[in-house]
Length: 237
Image 1 (tube, rainbow, N blue to C red):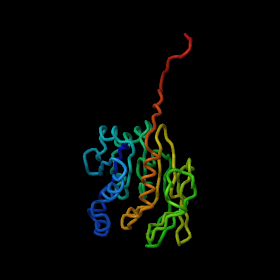
Image 2 (cartoon, helix red, strand yellow):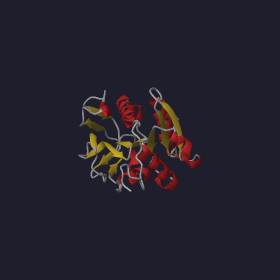
Image 3 (cartoon, rainbow, N blue to C red):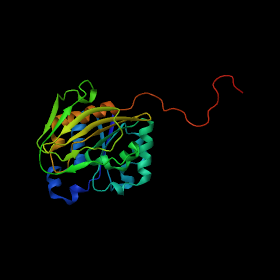
Image 4 (cartoon, rainbow, N blue to C red):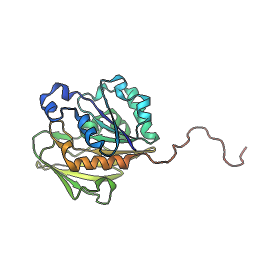
């Protein structure tokens, strides 16, 4: 069975009563609660030794799900490099919501990953713009969220390999809210919903997208290539 590690800063839940009320077991706890319905799940948080992402944990992880917001700079570069290498080797990575500003996502994208944002308690409509993609299976034409933080263009990311969702907000903004990438042997899926004081991760369609994303990001049997100096395979001397 696919092994999933859910990583969360786990800081807002300790300092903000509204977040604690919304996610009493932590955002990672809520994510793990529905992910474990179909996959084997382990959780890790920022304040654990090595942020819970030891070499042993990552070596056993097929897909890493990442949620971060207020403490991106506290993630050690050594751990970022460790995760980066595992993605190149084939581990899948799902980056959620404000994880767009994480060190690991920016390192993989090579851009600032900046955007427009606004918290105004309004709704969000997430349009499925790639209806044949495995990530949208069972989702329908759109996802309607009663409340979600506004993320707006321009989103400073490379052009996605595949654009899966585009979100619309009542203020007039749109946002590329579901994007896939390949880096090395690894697959990456960025998905926008998940503001810490809104119930986005209780929404069944959001849950379905994340589960589908895990399935899509899971490693294949493709071998990691050999790099560096290489002996001729034919008769060259």
